[in-house]
Image (cartoon, rainbow, N blue to C red; front, side):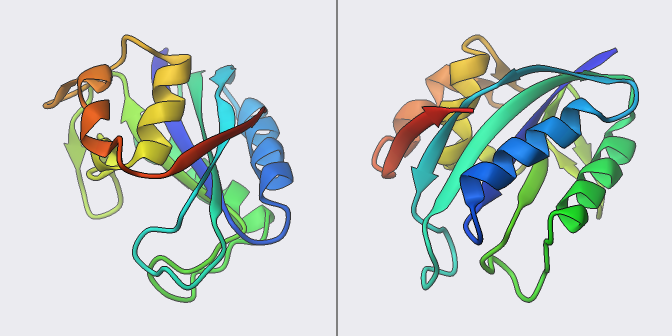
Length: 161
């Protein structure tokens, strides 16, 4: 069994409800157990700024699914919850990313682990550290040591999941 961390985000429809639905769907994946889910956090969009703020969270799972199989399952959940990919960084009903998978370092056209920009995003690091304060990012070290680099990014904690 492997431990994976999944970043969740949404800014269309009812983002908080969609993140809760996504976590429930993740918990139902075959050979996968939801271990923890962070609180919800509101953050400004990155990249394309002319869109609503995002609601973000991170969850931890224990899974027998290989990284690419886990990604495929997450993409199915996105699609079931209405995800459309109109352009890069577009507003979305749901975004699910595998950000960590054990201590694996993987770089394929479909999947990069650790997620290549996770250490630059407060909306990933803060919820990740909430549920896994000792977590290490392969190639970068303890996530807690990286939080100071993103402290200037506005992020507001909302209700727990």
